[in-house]
Image 1: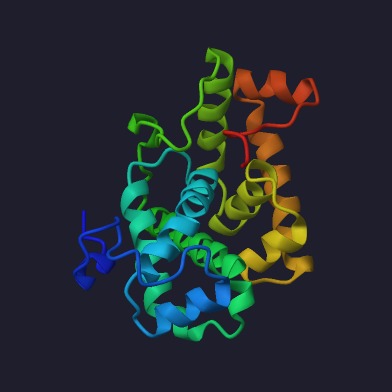
Image 2: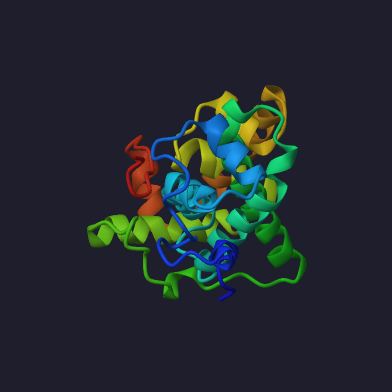
Length: 220
């Protein structure tokens, strides 16, 4: 795995470099300013604030993916390098979600293009997201991602953000960088495809007949 870029700042403390220069609890605007100015501790504070969010979104969209650690790292590299493009520092969280969603979307497209799907079932759940599940629930999770792997990238992302992560439609649309009408269309197609394919999986067929809602590890 590539080293975290903030380590190059030279600070011995913290996963992403020095952590003492930027005040703890600094607001989003102050954090963005620190990142743009390359202040010591800004990258560390940024990582600490959004690490779990980024990990959760990636898992919701991709499942327990074997590339999760690398993709998690890539999100922060891209975000730190492109933070100068963020027009409204108050929208930092939504922007981080958007960068994460775009990274997941690009990963799905790349795999579909090369006809290669990651064997996420072999990966161990990250400690931050690991939850005890019954065998039935674990099978439902596996079946869900088996179905999602067959969906077009746009629809898979929409479905995962809405039904797995539990985002509101407006939040999902913003994360994908599309209009509310577009996210609704993608979601409608995804739900239709999902229902049609779910019948082939006993665990999902039973769940759908019961009118339940599939959930991944609980949203924080």
